[in-house]
Image (cartoon, rainbow, N blue to C red; front, side, top):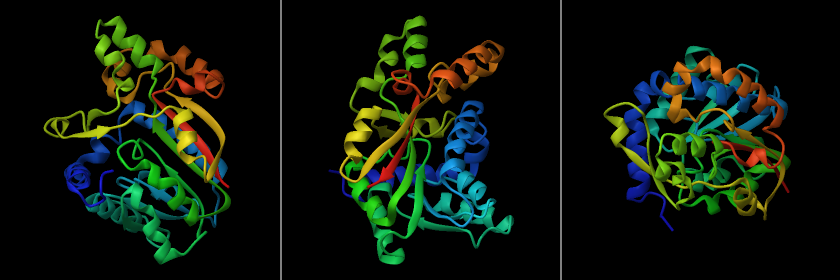
Length: 280
């Protein structure tokens, strides 16, 4: 078990503190990332509505928190990086939404600390996008702590980097890179926090989880409502350059993904899995 506050968490925090000033221009405008965020937001709009109070794990620069606040949703946005939180606050204040976006510096596996401030069952739901759960080595600490914060039957919507990426396997086998094709099957993989120099040299050990593994980890406190594969027939975000060059060729695959990504077994083959969990 990695102790919160240890060198691992300081390493992650330090990397994202450095990335924060350029996050929106680097990661935020990745065309594949934008597509993934759009799909994820469809789930948020179904689950949450005006007047709800929700919790975000791994808010980054507040892209989703501020977006939800525009609809009158109160968001407590958490992240391990203080610099990311500063940018979240600045965005919200600039748009006159500071009263709806509240930041707290806390790792995913320490989320239970918020119960001291907000109390039990204080939130109408929660969400986590873009792999923050994959980067916390103490993921098994999250479900029970999160359950205490959520009211009964509240939804937790998370996108988790999947262990089996169909597109990545086929792509890297086609370019004769079998080791990279199956890298997700390994226990831990070092993933750069950015594709751009020099932060592409700052890597975070990352674990991948199948939807079945996520269901097992959360089983004591949550039940699965639904699972959707994300980027099943489309490239993952690390192949954004290839996607831009060949974008017209992917249009039929986008339609294919719309039709099948929510159905078994395809929903377990995406770059990410969007998993909706209900608090027991």
